[in-house]
Length: 296
Image 1: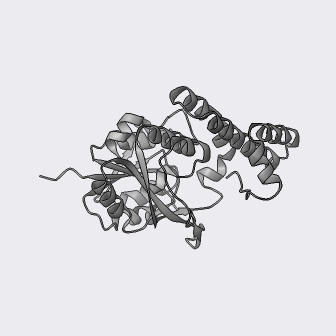
Image 2: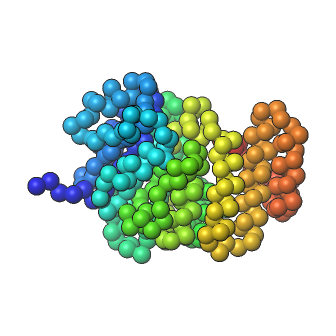
Image 3: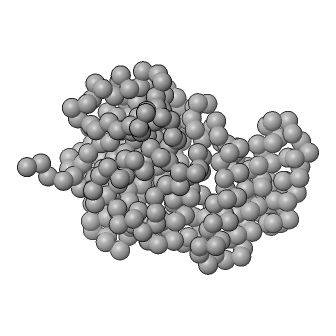
């Protein structure tokens, strides 16, 4: 009788024919063996499904009824509900795991039962796979504070984390009403109910390219952020400085998005609101004390 896998890796896939084979291979070549790979075909219209069929003896392929494109949240939830493993990992269809990723994270959670989730460092890579830089610098630390997770959105749940199934059940699954920012929403809810930990090892690769979800849906992501913030405020006793600080971040990011679209009056409006919500951080940006990154 086949043993129940301890770990399930879930990949949501929508039109990723250029990357999906490499992504799947990065899971199948893991040093940890007691695991399964579930790939959810989220209504692919390119050759992604044909590529996945090459691995049908080594992975499970799921799809929505009618092969509809329901979005990443629905695809991930379909994968979660199809399994009963102790741990769950998520991987975007254009990103990669380092070979020891699952093994090292399982070892950590097995040795530290007080933690519900562990994430790691990684590398940004170009679309051709060339490394750009480490995601976190050497000063990054994890204090498992929901206030910090809400404020800065600093760990990317779909790719660099391993989470206990019992924590997912307690926090709830991905919100299917979101087509963007669903990763941050779930990360916040997990931080509210479980301790999280960080491994300072580069165990995954985050691919940057213009067709990525984060690049295409920047405006939607930050608009959804307001909805996420409202739900978080009603659900958990966050500090006021956290709530106003997050509001400032969202307004600043929207200001950047509107500026990119040439909508300068709206951009200025949200920039001013951002400064009112967090004047100290705004001053730091103006004097160059805080580095400004793009909204994507």
